[in-house]
Image 1 (cartoon, rainbow, N blue to C red):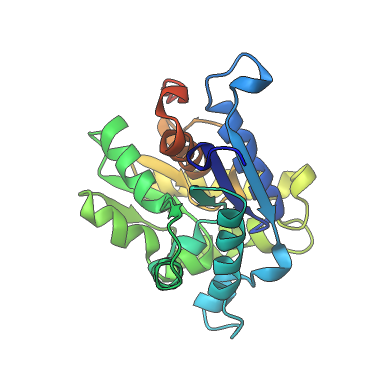
Image 2: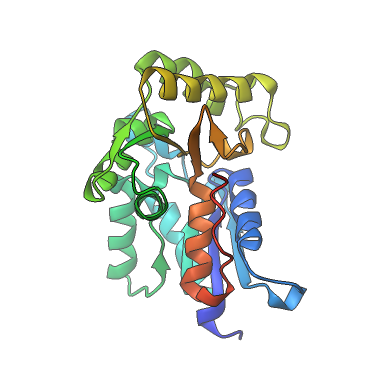
Length: 261
C-alpha cells in the first residue's frame, strides 16, 4: 500500500461535476513537471449515497445526507486517504458537518476532513486583509443556515447574502433549474445560467456594497471563471479547498498563490 500520509481523498458526486472540478484544481495547485510529481489522489463519486444537502437543510426532504457522507469518507480512509475534502459547500453547514465529524470520531476514524468554509475565511483574512464585507453566492441551504456567516464572524468578516428575490430567481435558479441550471447542464453550462450568476455578482457589488465575492457553491465556478468582477476579487471556494488538500499532505508541493489581482 502507498504511504497513507501522501494520499488525498475527494468526496465527489455532490455534485458529480463539482467533484471533477475539485480533482482538477488539486492537480492545478500542485508543483509538478512529471506524472510522478503529482500527489496520490482517490476520488469517490457516489451521488446516490448522498441526498441533496440543501433540500434537507430547508426541510423540503427528510433524506439525511450525513450517513452517506460518513460512508464516503470512511471508504476513502479504507483506501488509504489521510486527508479528505468534500466538493460541496452546503455539506459544510455546521448542522451537517459537525454531525459528520462527530460520527467519524465516534466510529474510530482518524481521517482529517478539511472544512472548506473555515479555509475560505482564513484565505480572505490572509490574502485580502482589508476586506470585511464578503458577498456569498451559494445554495439556499447554505444561505438559510448562515453557514458562511457563522464561520466568517470568527475571522472578523461579515457574510453578505443576496436579497431574497435575487437568491431565488438568479442564484438558486442558476444552480438548480432543470431547464438551464448548472446541475442539469454541468458539462456545457448554459448561457442563461452564467448570465444569472454574473447578474447576481453585479447585485452584490453594486447594490450590497461587498468588497469581495465568494463562489460558495461548487457548481458556480463551472459557470464563472473570472477572478475579478466589477473591481472586486472573486474567491473560488473550490480552489481554496484544493490548496488546503495539497498543503494537508505535502506542503512543499503547493504552488504559490495567484489571486489574479
